[in-house]
Image 1: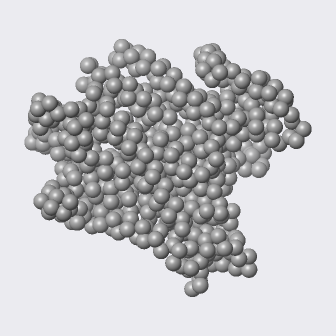
Image 2: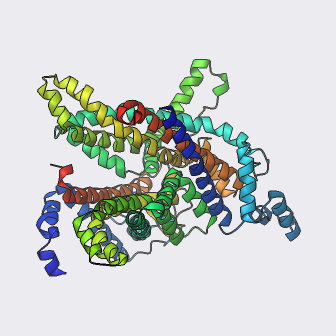
Image 3: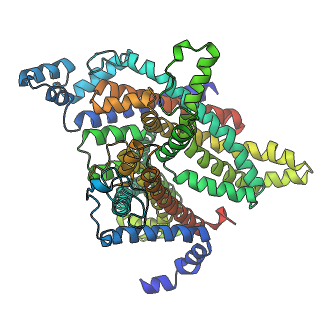
Amino acid sequence: MLTYLSKRLLMMLPLLLGITLISFMVIHLAPGEPTDLQTAMNPKASAQLQQRLRTEYGLDKPILVQYGEWVSRLARFDFGNSFSQDRRPVIDKIRERLPITILINVLSIALILVVSIPIGILSATKRNSLFDRLTTIFVFIGFAAPSFWLALLLMDYLGVHLGLLPVAGIKSLGFEYLGWGGKVMDILRHLMLPVFISAFGGLAGFSRYVRSNMLEVVRQDYILTARAKGLSERSVIYKHALRNALLPVITILGLSVPGLIGGSVIFETIFAIPGMGKLFYDGVMMRDYPLIMGILVIGAILTLIGNLLADISYALADPRIRNS
Amino acid sequence: MVSWFRHSFFRDVFWQRLRGNRLAIAGGLIVVLMFVMAAVASLTGRDPGAIDIAHRLLPPSWHYPLGTDQLGRDVMTRLLYGARISLLVGFVAVGIATAIGVVLGALAGYYGRWVDAVIMRFVDIMLCFPTFFLILAVIAFLEPSIWNIMAVIGLTSWMGVARLVRAEFLSLRERDFVQAARALGAPDRRVIFRHLLPNALAPVLVSATLGVAGAILTESALSFLGIGVQPPTPSWGNMLIAGKQTLGTAWWLSAFPGLAILITVLGYNLLGEGIRDALDPRLRE
């Protein structure tokens, strides 16, 4: 297990390097420069000023040199300073925004698992029942509905029309004056819609996936054996079938991390949540290279951690892998 | 072509099975309907960009079946023209992704060894990207145009196809008919294009059909964020921006473009799953 783990950890490094290399090239080779934006706003800006800014940002050096410098700073956990007015270190900016994004994503993964696994099992064991048909319809619609549109509809109906839930931000106006419990409740109320929206597509996908895995597993010989032994149906399904059906789900969960992180741009922009997705969107609009690179690296690291956790849980759950 | 159809797996098995699947037929009808919408858009005789302030924000009526927006433009006409954009983006982006995926997957699967290692590591890297972040950054840096969107979506969504084609090639490579072709001295090019590729295309077809749905969703999300198809060109995504601005007052501005996206994506998904089931009945029963 330990050798397996260390091997996996070692493989992450070149992967991360490759990701940063591609992002760096794509971002720096795209036409236009951050200095264009900053000097375009200012009629007094001269060509010299633009040149000075480029030197200050290090944009005048050859791109490979820039990348080399960036990587060597990254190795010391220095993400550089933002190009924006405040010139603050990128790492500080990300650190403020990361927790809320992670909180929402973790909550939505939890919601996905808690809801979709029972749905998947039920529709597989009661195949072609009314429940199975209804959830199949829900799954296809859930797959097809654009999450931002669903967000709009829910904001319109639950937020504006019924006035049940707040539609923007993560805190109410009088947040500071609330007690401890009131603060938690306030944040939870604000998070309800975003978490539901970010989980929605995954709910559909995962319940479908659990269902088809269950159907596949139930056909295997070892299930026939378990039944032949005279085990109760309950024990056949929950002890023998479920464990094998959930194994691939772990991998898919790991693979869905980049999608969740990417999706955070959309719902954080819609719900005006000050998270990493919104930070990225704003950074992109300002061509804040260090910030963009920083967030891409953090996103890639989160993805790799997700995959690693998935592999570890897979190995823990499946002795065939653990011992090989 | 006709004789090929008359005596083939496609007519005897695939087509029969697909026809028997009601959901797949429904999906196919939706896809056809979308082509019809795109084709008849100009027949309404209305200009999707015609501004008419006197008739702004009208709810659906006989004259304006889907209402009008803040500038008094007819929502139905814009929706029909938007179908053209979605269709174009969906097919071109998937075309690019499929072409890249097939070529890289075929190279990796056929030549194996270091070619395979290099290509598959590249696939791993691309799969670890929060792709939407990368798309967002690139689109925002380039001039936002529909061509850039199609190219970027295509360039970031080929990995699944590459993996599929590689897996098919790996298993087909060892089959007798391929071994026979090679033993007879057929050049690599002929083995790949005549013997391997035609047999590996079925799963690619499924993934391409589902890919169209994904590309349409991505385009609408980008347009909704304001960095996709730029107004005044109507796209279903950028029509929803108006829906956001009139939240709580004009439901028809957010309801109809969203429904159009949902139904279209649903159509491609149903058709794609139908094709998959028809090709591999083991998955259904």
